Image 1 (tube, one colour):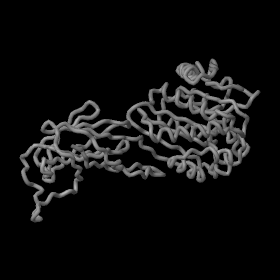
Image 2: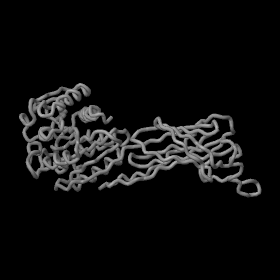
Image 3: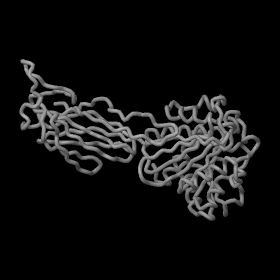
Image 4: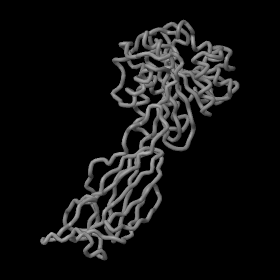
Length: 388
């Protein structure tokens, strides 16, 4: 026999500036084996059985035993109510009402009665992830998949920083094939974009790249991280600012209107200062700033950097990232001593563990493998904070 399901997921809306417009969809019908030896049949929720005379026999023999289900996998997103339904039919193809169906998903058990159309429905609230939902009635059972993706929303901060980053040919060439990335690239024309991914309860963390517009590998890595989080669940909230300085990125220049932003994160009114304010406003528990360092420059190597004071966890995090991504680490005694006004140091001085991660490549260029290495450190940062 064949199991088919009729399933749907409610499309809850976010308060997005740029909305996640993905509908909660029913993925392709999947044949699922069930117990029993009834003849094979596939029926949808709208199927109505009629006898040879044309008389509607949909409610015939409602007290019979279940012989068939009809099933489809469900796609949803975090924060939405996911609705899963199955239709029960007897061996003659007639629907069965008032039957108790047991559903099992994520270690929990649910019960629902089939209605007059033979449909039993269960509503679920699930964290981001991929789940198997099983169901059974009268000794007949089956299973399907529920895929809950991270919810996301994009906000544009109009700090007079907006530009078309695709004017930078090296950036344009490395934009990943991703609907969400395309949205955030478009958003950068109007200002500094931030995307928020949420997949459940857990830490809130913040990632930045592109404080220097000509440090390209880390910005490409940030775009690739966004693509990764489209399909990979997280256990908390991740904010990503892939291009802090879109004007600089578009022109492939280091500073913003001649201002070195990573020396002025403690100066009111600068973009970097405003970014620090966001990190504290969102009550983030960790921060990672991702850069590129030129050969012969400072620090001049693939490295994760942190400080002991005032947040010892910064040093622990830097060492973890270094080991996990096979790069060097540098730990300084006190935030603000080596790099006064830097984003990492300014955030650490506010009591939030922070790291700076660098990959070595000439400024304005993308050395082979450096976006992958930067992405690896971003993922190590998320792993350390128990988000992936």
